[in-house]
Image: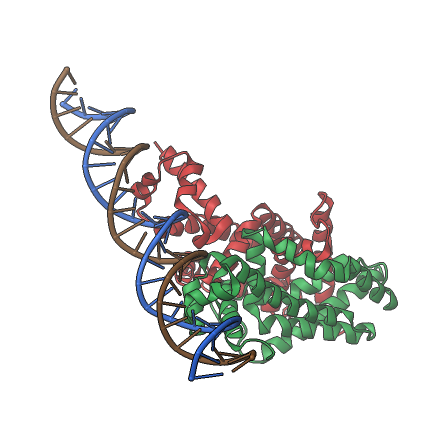
Length: 207
Length: 207
DNA sequence: ATTGTTCTTAACCATATGGTTAATATAATC
DNA sequence: GATTATATTAACCATATGGTTAAGAACAAT
């Protein structure tokens, strides 16, 4: 047997519950119900709410980190790399919009466990090379004097924010934002153009 | 007497508590303690947790909305306007980083009350003119064919995301991000250049 | 001083929630 | 088939939490 069917059901249910409501808002009973199982079983398998939470987080994170590393790591030339980077960031975040909101919030409200988890999952695997790699990529593209940190902040901000703040933005604008499949594609092009021109212009000392 | 001193203490304490922990995580007892007051007094003045929450939210929001409208509404020429827009967005968000995280999260987890609140505070006052105004500004700057929605998303994303995701980003990068007063200034310039060049290039149909 | 109104509190209350237990069903082992 | 180990549940338990109540301060009005 690979992994207990019931156990998996619980994890799935727990993931939904935690991502929707955060640690404090999540209810063990709700998880049990969603998994079609008695509450005591949760404790039988996972001991406590904290432990279950931690496990859910770890699993969800592993997936995300994996995806990100893969996205950032590819070895294409600069322009196609940038295009794909944006494309995949947008896709990634839009396939799990709740997740990023959740991470940002929980990292704010419950500072305890998350940092430790990050250390485990990320630090050792990238060891600060994140920025170095990007810098290398920029150099190869002939814009090595452009700071990788700013570059990275720009790309990530542009890709992530609208999805994360979607409920907020839609309220403020008073209309649907991601309507139609066009939106994401448009946005993709917009970000690409913005970054590309923003970089080129600057490094040539233009205007 | 303008506004009951004790009442104000409670609101202040409640604000801190709710912004730090969200509705579910916030504790009435903690608010009472922070305000140096008996718990029953909270109910004497504000009836219930929900009511208090709602009030806190409304107050905090009013302030923010006011600031934003003021920022977006000024009548300068395009370039100085953009520069100030960025400057003030950055300043605004960095003076209350928790607030935006909070809004984004609560709008995700507790969809009930927030939309109603927004309607009350915002809709009537801007009535979709938000984008129209920006579009007008762009026209006057000679780049009227640049879509206001994309422009707005870009500016806001670039200004807001790093502050909101700060804990996350610092974990991933493994270093302080907002160290030194330089950072904000640098970022200010970076965003300004990016947007400016991104717009100019595009509208001229340049590569 | 006396009375009445507004604040403020200590002591409670009801309930929800995470967690436990002891008994039972199910599957595995012999 | 009997025995043992593993799953699963119903019934409880302890505690935390939002909320209430009744009594007493503080203060104003007379």
